[in-house]
Image (tube, rainbow, N blue to C red):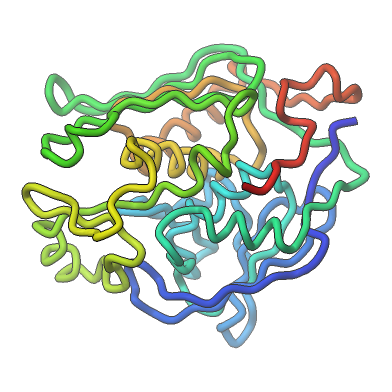
Length: 307
């Protein structure tokens, strides 16, 4: 049986929120089978749980935000991407502020935290949502068009293409394909950092965003070049970060997908729209488990190795 996974022990991290700039501490704790991933705001007079689901997403401005009523947690996508990459099904995330810490701007620190706590197999089957029919969402027309699509596939692979008119981005790969069955999430995707442009910073900060951003957690570009002295971690780090984000956004479904995801200029909003469209089209998917590990897609039965 392909089993659900949680942590063997708890682990903690302290950092700042990318957009809020607030100091925040998170504690990742094991959870029982079929719990899912649950964020718990422990800074409130009475702690409030927010269970990860596509319909819990309340805002997609520059990040994915989930909410339970008026209680929110911002920028959940990098931690969820790490959970998706390592196959963690059940987890409590205790958090004492309204935004997940950005740490180094990638998912690598979250991968380290999860792997240092250890991954434990549980006595319950992993439940996958398997695509039966293609589902597509689109926005805009012509030069402003963007789209995202899920198609049937025995496994999980992602294809993403970006389109930035900027010298530093143009000189790198703007399209990438990542297949969980043959690639290594920890080596190929997890270290890709978020990025931004100096021309946007003033506008973002005027709107209360990017208050915790800097060269230690964001790839920053002026009109011509990258300002980070160490350069890029991958030749195609920009588009790989989009894959990283998409994996986190899609994990907001609450269950792992068996599907092929492809996108052009998509982002948090369109990714969530895709999940909501999928949930409405009940004929386009089914829930499956694997009593025999050998019948599962390649790469899903093994716990991801550290780099």
